[in-house]
Image 1 (cartoon, one colour):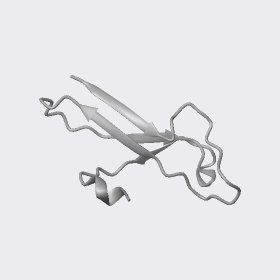
Image 2 (spheres, rainbow, N blue to C red):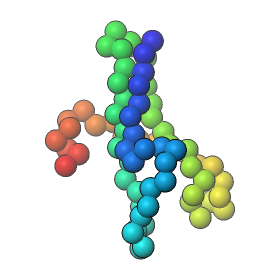
Image 3 (cartoon, rainbow, N blue to C red):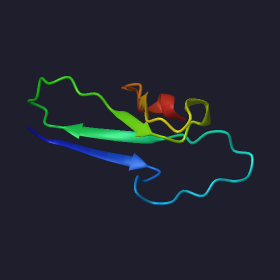
Length: 71
């Protein structure tokens, strides 16, 4: 079993946002073994949502198979 995830902006590093920015768009590429039949899921766990009082929340990603739809 092989899986490699690449995320932008990188996790574990500071990302400075302009004042007034209300969101951060993450892009994740998940590379897996072609022979793997395991259904993979990607999610980001964060505690930054002020509405949740700082509780950890899962933010799911949507799978995109057509890269031109990212533009």
